[in-house]
Length: 548
Image (tube, rainbow, N blue to C red; front, side):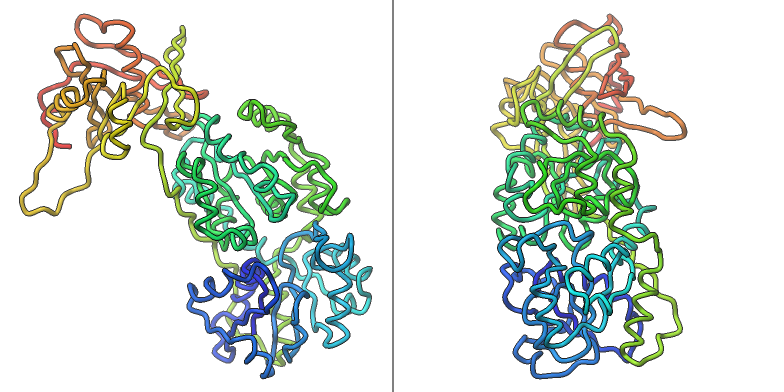
């Protein structure tokens, strides 16, 4: 029987399931321990997996060969059978003042441990680090006698999945951008409660073509607010392309994909640090729920802290530059024992409790699934242009998130009509193949002429061609132009930009001065620290007649 009080506890238990993989002697059942404010999403997660659930009242009437839980809280003692307790997080870093004993670590609270031990002692406390055994002994010496250092099964999944980093980034649509992950725990001291506007601020201030934003949020906060309410609160950031990964597994694959982390005192940061030593900064001031000397306390004491949210993009960049390798690794070492066989260790222990020999086949951590990309991708941008000796610097921000730029670039057919009417540059991407018995389509030249006629405020209209080149028409110019952004190649890797970026560079150039007499020009387009060559020449008839 897998017994969970909340979604986060359930997700930890799901990482235990592969221990019994392929064993037809085992029947896997789930029940929800009542009493938690955050149990709402637990049953729906089990239903999504197709797991068999047992109502709590019925579960208490039966006996089980093994009960696996991720928290000593609640009326777990009412279930009959040997119990295995696994941690529901990493490091035991927080104290929850509204529950149990003051200043006790959640998960190691003597009030819950002793009550459970008095009724039915746990057969095994499966811990992740020797220091946790010491802390358990301080909280309840009797429980510590049944404790063993097993390791962290979630960490094993993270480490096993680390080679899939590029696949995860491709699934998210990250590309060559820096993926900045915000990690929020739950409760009054969490990032999402103390800095509710931070995701929207970052989405507005960080250049869209240089940064991608993701928010990893604790399942308790999702359960408390509900999926719909959470999405509405985060709407400005989600509309600007922020990723909100699923709380079961995608949060971990998103951490693997990340380039930098902004965290509070939640333990998700420890998994991020364990996967690779990468930049991490804090928005937690210390104190409060955070237990001094805990792994998260170690990390937060040694990393840069975001002091204010005034010029947020600059402050984030400064904090990340101030990070030096080492603290993340030290914090991870304080949370996780240096073992890589947690699943095998737990398997041996639980099968010994069952009095069974484990199956002959090996078990390995299941790789994390690819995360789902952002649900909404901006289709209109305020484009800021700076022209200098090195070329034309293009910086794009989702429309309406900040001050207007040199021009508004809008994708026709993906943005609202209001934005299309305001566009200085209007462009269209190829449509997917049609299944209509009698199809109707534009040629590139036909659509650009139509757009300039139908949208009198538009200065330039462009069609992105199937091969990635573009056909551009500018109001007042007789000829149509072919625009192509050349890819960059360095150290065996190729970097490409969205054709719309090159169109904005050409649009800015042509509004400032006329092209050469033959209509041929090469200009440098600067995006972040990269320079791309943009070629401009008169379009051929074949390009003009391409179907889009």
